[in-house]
Length: 386
Image 1 (cartoon, rainbow, N blue to C red):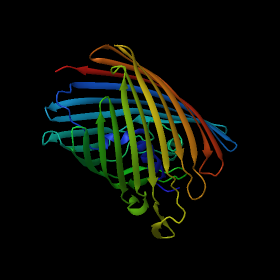
Image 2 (image 1 turned 135 degrees about the vertical axis):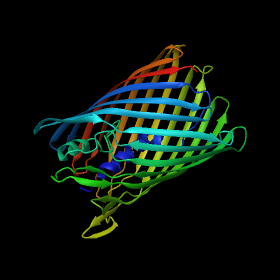
Image 3 (image 1 turned 90 degrees about the vertical axis):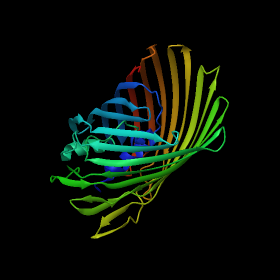
Image 4 (image 1 turned 120 degrees about the horizontal axis):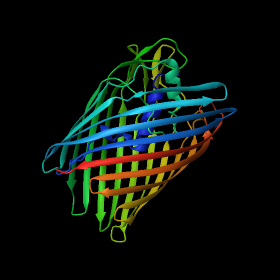
């Protein structure tokens, strides 16, 4: 198995869940107060692939702090506790757990807040050096049909920068462009099914994109596109793998109703994935049979204020994962969710929610694959007024 198959689906999942936001140009809003949040997610998935049944569970507890340094300068610091476990028909329960790395993001705004410059860093404080068994457990969480919260613990020292610029074309239309570069440092880890540890050097990642926002009364429409490019990954200082480019198109629409008491949102996301390059028979070339399939995501949600202090959210999502050129890895996934957000004071917000997920397709083994999953979550956000 190529070393970066783990990263391939980590990145794809990040795009689908919006987890890459910490490495993208941000938005600086003067006057935003200091805040901290603690979230806890519990997920359980039943997976039937061929004659094999597997249950995987995850506990993910991220902690984040927002620091307003100055009027046009802000910082975000975050980390998380992660626990992953699995049970199969032929083995006892196995698990891996530990802290994720400490992440830092600093943004500053210039030119009347139209230009935003950012610095992002990943400090290798988490559990990055996994054994072969631990990495094999993590591998069960990287399949693209599973919408897990994370499939990574620790890694190396990463450093990067972001830049974004927004310009109002009219009173209701704004065009934004942005780019980011991230250098991922090397770290020691293992591969499933191997006994010797390796040094993995993920290399450079870069993104460039554009966004068009259109406001009209109580509604907003957004079109966006992003191109992601990945450098060559090295294993023990030897070029081993290069993830193909990814081109993303998205359209989102939001409208408020009943004088702002409700808000309806809907959108569609398409990810086109190009061929990887891989070392084979002593040479490093584009793979002859593409292992990547495209993604299509359609989502909708409705927020409704039952009272001034209680908001209910109903959501639905459909995800189509295309098969690769080996006619494997495809999936059709349907998600439904319900959440309630209570704001007892202006400084505290508590959200309790859950979602149910079901899907079917073809696993990378070529066998039929079905999944059923559920998630429960609790989020607490505390803001301190200046």
